Length: 308
Image (cartoon, rainbow, N blue to C red):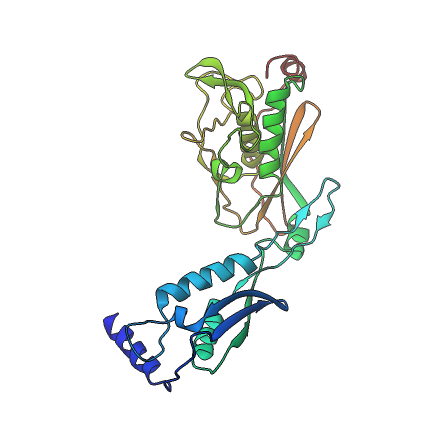
C-alpha cells in the first residue's frame, strides 16, 4: 500500500507546476445550475509547493456532491388495480470521472467549470421482470381479524403495506423484521393487544404477527424453504394450532429462502376484516406445493368478533 501511495505521489508531482492566484476556483454545475464552488487552494496540501489534491478534502467534496445529486432507483410495482407502475432509474455521482475532473481542473489555469458526471443506477425489479413474475399464483392464504379494533387494524395495514410488492430472488433470504422495519410510534404504529410470555398485554405494533403468520402459511403452501419461525407462547385464534409465526424487533423473526429458480412476488391486501397474501412467480417455475390446514368458517366469524 505504501509503495502504491509513493508511486501515486510521484506521478502526480510529474504534472507541470502551476502557480494559481488565491481566488482561482473549481465550479461544480449540475443540470445547468451552479451547485458548489471551491477555491483550488482549499483542495490541496499546503505543506508542499507543488499543487496536489488533499484526499481527505476531496473525499468530503465528493460525498457532499453525491448527496446533492443522487436519486435512488424505484422498482416497478403493482398498484391496487394490478396495473404495472413503471420502474425508474436512479443516479449517483460517477466518482471516478469526478475525481479525474478535479485533478484536471487543478492543473488548469483560472476558474474551471465541472459538469457533474452521473452514473445510472438500475432498480432491482424492472417492469419487464414484474410482468413475467406476476403471471402465476403459487400460494395464497387468508386470515381474519376484528376490523372494529382500530389500533390493531391500523398496525396490520401498515405491516401488510411494507411487505406488499416485495420480490424475493432465487437463493435470496427474506426477513420479515428487515422488510417491515422497526415498529415505532414515529412510523405510525399504535398500541394494540400482544401476547407476552403467555399473557395478553398491549404494546406498540400489536397485530403484526397476524401479517407474519399469514405470510408464513402462504409461502409454506408455495413450497418454499422455511428458515426461521417461532410459535407464540399462547395459541392465537387467527390460524390453526401450530400455524403461527411470531415476530419481534429484538426477538423472533420469520425468515424464508427462495429455493426456486424464479423470483417470487409477494402481494398483500386488506379487505375489510381479512388480510389476503398471495405468492406469484413466472410460468416457468416448477412448484412443489405443500398441504396446509385452513380455518373453518365458524372460527373465522368468531375471530371477527374477538379482540383480534
